Image 1: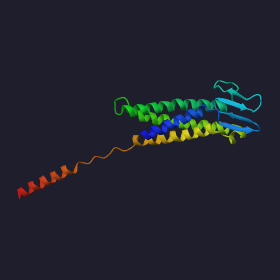
Image 2: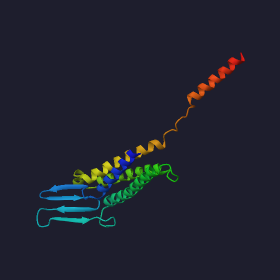
Image 3: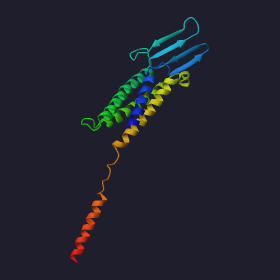
Image 4: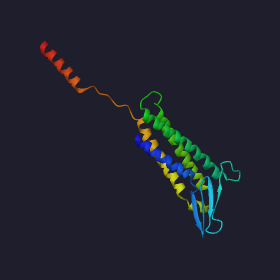
Length: 191
C-alpha cells in the first residue's frame, strides 16, 4: 500500500501544479508570448507593456463553457483526490483499528472518480479550443495527463487486495501424519 500512497501522493502534487499554473497553452507570436491555464491568461511582450494577465474566475459570465466546465471538474477532482490520499494515510497509520476497514475502498473510489473527472476536463478543454491552442499545449496540460495516469495506477494497486480471494487454509501436515500413524498403530494392535 506504500506504492499506492507514493503514486497517489505524486499524482496529487502533479494535479495541484497542473491545476494552478497558467501554462496549459503557450505560444510565441513574434516577440510576444501568450500563455494560459484554467485560472489565468497572460500576454507578454518585450516592450513597454511587459506582462499583462487576466484572472479567470469560475463565475465569469464572459468565460466560455468549455473553459468553465474543466475548472469545475478539476476542482472536484482535487477535492476527491485529497480525500482519497487522507483516507489512505489514515488506513496505513491506523492499520486494523476499528473504523478504518473501508479506507481502501474510499481511496480507490475517490481516485477512480478523480481520474475520470480529470480525463473529461482534458478532453473538453482540448476539443473546443481554437486550433492554435490545441496545437500548442504546455506543461500544465501534460502534468494533468500524468496525474490522471498515476491516479489510475493507484486505483489498480488498491483494487487488487480488496478483491483478492481469501487464502485457502490447509490443515497442518504434522498433525495429519501423527493422526494416521496413531490409527495405524491401533489397527496393528487389534490384529
